Length: 329
Image (cartoon, rainbow, N blue to C red):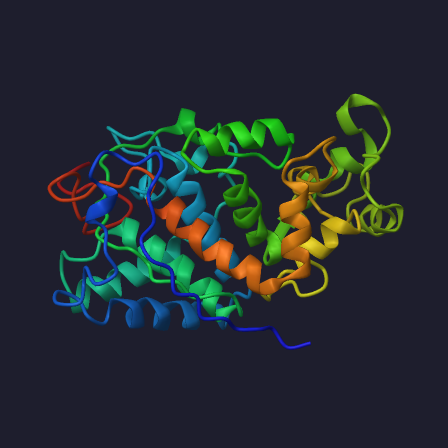
């Protein structure tokens, strides 16, 4: 079945969790006069990277997520260690897991060549996520732009990102803390419809769920048998698996159909449907029935997430190099 492509036009929505007045300064035409080819430049770099790395679209989408959930969408995740920065790259959820930094560097370098000092690294991440989803068969949306880059990182907050081991209540709390609701939670989790995941994030469900020495009872037996072959006890915890075995590189609603069959790879995936009395279950079922509904909600939720506490106007800076602050060591 061909992957449906849907053009979703979404207006700027009320932004929860944003700094007063900041999100309203974001607009889709922010670079029309100063860097009109920004989207095309990022798209060209991403397509080139994808030729050698089928995972890169999913990885870049995840980078935007991990950036925005830590002190807002300020490109803090891109900063390397320095005398003034303890990098978020070494937080537990990111270390040896988050990837795509070199592609962001390449996109930024191309933008600097065309439009020096104009496009922020935070906006590169936002554009890259949108392009990645679109090129994988997912929805389009009008990316709101005009973010500025921060000068700090927060490894403690990065260590508290939503986790694949979180139960539903914890996930809801972490999303609510940045102004996102249950629909945002279910829609943004749908990004697990593409990409890969390491065995270490499922072995507890296979062998010792909640320290019971038994498998997760919400995991389909046939799927568990398949995963045991892929992730044997005591095996390589970094071995990769498809998050969605049906269309691993395509952006569609198969993720939700898998959850209905109790074949969500991560605990956090299956919790959306199988947690007792889950208020998110009807949303999962709606998205499983209708890819159109999923695409619309995902586009809105990406805008909501992209508007978490942006730096705008004279706040922050536009980094020349995404890995370090300007004039910094």
